[in-house]
Length: 67
Image 1 (spheres, rainbow, N blue to C red):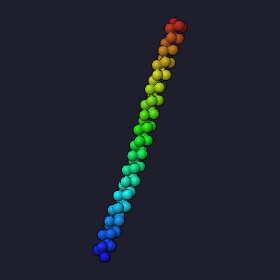
Image 2: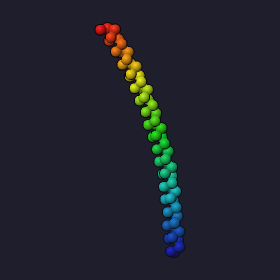
Image 3: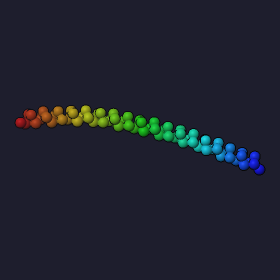
Image 4: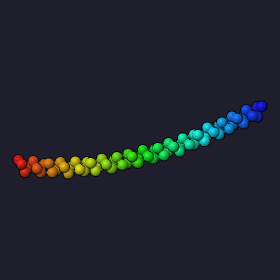
């Protein structure tokens, strides 16, 4: 009876270990996905900043031509 209880506890601990490992794998994948999204967002922000600078320069030129 005690042996059965210990085996049951050991089995449950092993299952919890597997569940924790699966969770770690999922979290690692999620972190990688988040890092990729942040990297993509930073790249888009750089592109957007460049477009803003270009547009700002064109607007200034037009205002100089008008004035």
